[in-house]
Amino acid sequence: MTSDFNGTRPPALTLAGVSRRYGGVHAATSLDLTVTPGEMVTVIGPSGCGKSTMLRMIAGLERPDSGIITIAGEVVADRRRYQEPERRRVGLVFQEHALFPNLTVAKNVAFGLNRLPSRERQKRVAEVLELVRLGHLAARYPHELSGGEQQRVALARALAPRPAVVLLDEPFSSLDETLRGRVRADIVAVLQETGTTSLLVTHDQTEALSVGDRVVVMRDGAIEQADTPEKVFEQPSTRFVASFMGDADFLPANVHNALLTCEIGVVSTVPGWANCDVNVDVVLRPHEVALAHDPAATARVISQEYRGAFVLHYIRLASGRTLRSWQPHHIRYAPGTPVNVTVAAGTSPTLLVDDRAVTEPPVGTAGRPTQPPAPSPITVLR
Ligand SMILES: Nc1ncnc2c1ncn2[C@@H]1O[C@H](COP(=O)(O)OP(=O)(O)OP(=O)(O)O)[C@@H](O)[C@H]1O
Image (cartoon, rainbow, N blue to C red; front, side, top):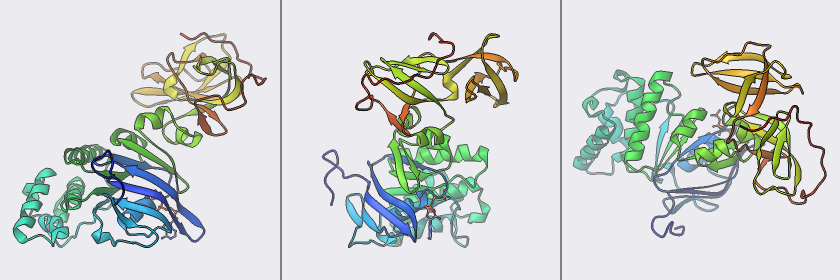
């Protein structure tokens, strides 16, 4: 058993230094993660970054080359031990519904409960079908259900044996856009209601941010950042996370005596950066970039995309760099319009040095003379 967590329950799941290679491919590299009971963690990253490999190792469908995995305090995989999937307290929900087509809904849900006496089994099946609001469809076969209903049955089946962790691998991706939102809300509600610990793999940034208590961003087999949705979006730890989790542009900038400036002028003050002179890249998201028509401005609108609630404008700066700006849907600057570009008041943008976010001046930068990029024309913060 691992040590107690918060003095009471152990973590629902831990990975410590978990790695897996397929020939020359490092599918998972030294993964470290601790998931607390009841937490919902979303896992996101580009195709092939190792999301499914991580889930498969937790489920016991794949054996790690090294590292330790515990579930509810019990070691299920380490150098010596390897617990079979059916003995792990893990429930699985996959993209394809994976229900047995020849079994009714009730029998599908009862499938993992064969150790229970018949009466208890029936009671538990009825309970979980009620939970996903499908009690009235217990006698139907999978082909008689909608895609959303099939996913709710899959969740009921995963929850029935009271697993310590439920793993969901892109459970909504086969559903169309409208249904997707509804089924997602239903499933998340059931997981929250039952206090179920879960890991949900998704390709959808909005889903990862809106559903997760914590978001794990993976890249090339490694965890790049594991944080609250707010931190992942507002304080990305790397250039990759900043650009992967939403639109982001990067401008060379300089912090001199706590004042952050770049090509568009003064961006903000940076508390704690007094007495330093550091070149950085500043991360700007389109909602942080303000525009105003100004015949004297050197920046130009290149194009715009109508997105319904807002219009995304592409701006070419004097340097030739491009910046994007969201404008309310009723504001549309025609291509060629000269615009004054500023950073919205109250923005505290992420600063990068060598692709990593920095919150303090790098060691040895105090007083270092650097050549600040020439701001054109300095814009006073509103
Ligand atoms: N059984 C296998 N044999 C060889 N290589 C594999 C195997 N399974 C996965 N890989 C490789 O390991 C890497 C990680 O794959 P994985 O399926 O975990 O990625 P993923 O992030 O889930 O991708 P996707 O989002 O496309 O599903 C990929 O390069 C993949 O080609």
